[in-house]
Length: 117
Image (tube, rainbow, N blue to C red):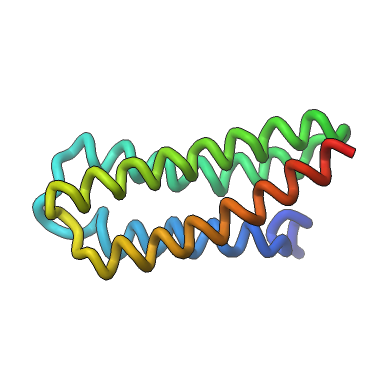
């Protein structure tokens, strides 16, 4: 048995983004605890808000959770930007994660716009 949100492409991509951050950054050496905590929570928040938003009955309520998920995604991008500037993650990894974040952002934006109608 699967919940409907588990079938959503945006949910699957958000999970992949979170797992990539976890495996390639959060489990690596050299990060400060606050870097790990903030980036881990923000990337997990994307997934959780997509799931929670899918449970809502009205489009405005669903939209609110997608907006929050997108905000958490932007938070991740800012954190990744700082980590790259501090040479705590390789430029190639940063570029790869930024591409995943861009794709997620576009999907969430389209969902938000569709929920406005």
